[in-house]
Every structure is written in C-alpha cells, then in structure tokens.
Image (cartoon, rainbow, N blue to C red; front, side, top):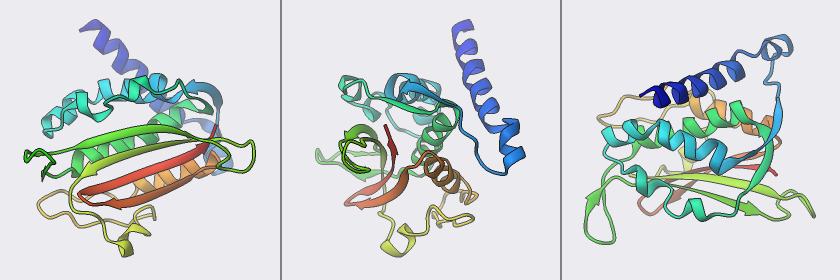
Length: 201
C-alpha cells in the first residue's frame, strides 16, 4: 500500500508542477521544461498502472491495452515529461470513458482499448525523426465532419447514455503537442476511433 501511495504522490506532484508552473502564467502559454525520457517506460507504462482500476471498472482489460508494446524498441524523445504525461493520461481517460462494446473477430462482445508507440523516420524532413503515439477505442466511428473539430476548444460530441465531456481535454492535448512542434489527429476505424499525436524525437 505504501508503494502505491508513493507512486500516486509522484504522479500527482508531476502533474501539479507541470500545470501550475509560474512561467505558463507569466508568458501566457505553455513553457516547456524538456528532458530526455522514454515514452513507454517513463510515461505510458506508469499511467497504465495508475489507471488500472479505472479501466477495470469500465470493463477494459489493462493487460490487453499495450499488448506487445513492451517489446517495442526503447524510444527516447526530448519532451516536457509532465505535460506529455498529461497528454497521454487525457487520451487514456477518454478511451476508458467512451469505449463501447463491440463483437470482436472471435464473436465475443467486449470493450477494446489499444495503444501503440512507433518511430517515424524523416517525418519532419530528412534526418528529423518523430515519435507517434496512438490510442484506439472500440465504438461507433466519429464521422468525418466531427473528426475535424474534436480538437477544437469547447467542441463536444454527443454520447448517448454517457456523460458528455467538457470540450477542453483534446484541445489541451492539441496545444501541448503543438508547443512541442508536433501534430495531432483522429482516424475513424471500422469498429472504433484512433486518436494520435506525433512529436519530434
């Protein structure tokens, strides 16, 4: 229990420091404190453990979310670890909240959440590589007209039977990623939705 409390304290402290950093208010925009970090080990893996109970309550098996991801090449990037952790946490939170049951390829009815980390060579030009992180959740695909607006401030999708979001989460994701020099996006899949960001390595 003590280890769990310590881990929660570390994450909470990191989130508060990165959100309430005085420079954000002084300059009126997110000011980055970049350090070298490993996206899987330092951010994704820890957030999966931290949110294990939330996913379980929503009927999503945590062990399947990052299946095989631990075998991914250790991908280092230079980023503001606190802000980037909040970006990933936001995408996980949305996936847990809005994932809906589908019938999978084996005929089983279940909620599916998957994430993935990949390296994209020369994405930002020759010799300028990038890291792509995505979260896929099952449910009705968002139509193209809404897909272009989901990252805009105040935009909210209607989810029958579910509490609507505030319309700020994905806009925060977009702001932080763009301050890092990256891009965000959404892809409608056959049985779900993929949200992703790409940032320079």
